Each structure stands twice: as structure tokens, then as C-alpha cells.
Length: 112
Image (tube, rainbow, N blue to C red; front, side, top):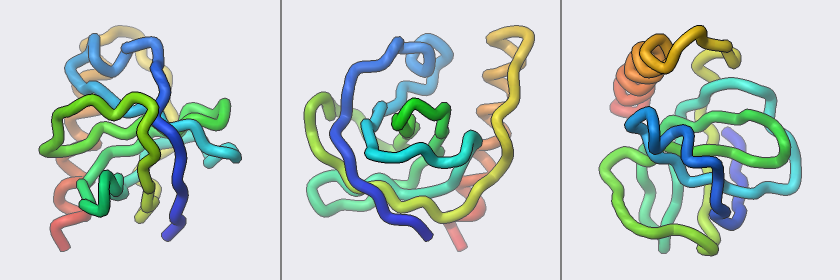
């Protein structure tokens, strides 16, 4: 498990467009590209999350069962397990299908 913290910054809203809004967290290192299961800690409360590392010292977190404005707030990140490597998709529909599978897998993993 890896523990990280960082400030939530504005992104390009691609996750939101696909139906999976993410908190874009600026960190001081690059995590290997890929999809991870983990937790986001907001004001001391843990939320299960699907975490994407695209590089550029950013981690994108789709936070399960959370809604609210996190811009400019500091959050904690716990990386539990890498789920898969980064993939490129031919269409938004293909990406949505894979993200849905990833979220299902992450939820099962984090329920244990």
C-alpha cells in the first residue's frame, strides 16, 4: 500500500464527460501508468475509489458514493492494488465499457 496526499486541481473534464467524474490530485511524483484500487481520504473519512495514473504528477480518482466540490482541497490517497495497465481505446463507448468493468472489479476487491 502506498500513501500519498495532494491538492485537487482542475482537469480537462474527460471523466465527467464519460460519466465518471474524477478528482484530479496533484502529487509530487509519477505513479506507474494504470488503474488502481484504493481510497481517497477527505476530511478524515475514507472513500473507496478507482484511481487512474496518467503520469504528469497527477492521479485521477473516481470516488464511489461521494459528491461535492473538492477543488483546491488537500486529500489523502491510499493505493491498495494495481488492477491493470493503461490502455488506449478506439471510442468513448469502448472506454466506458472497460471503466465499468474496472469499477466492478475494484468494488469487489475493496469489499474483502
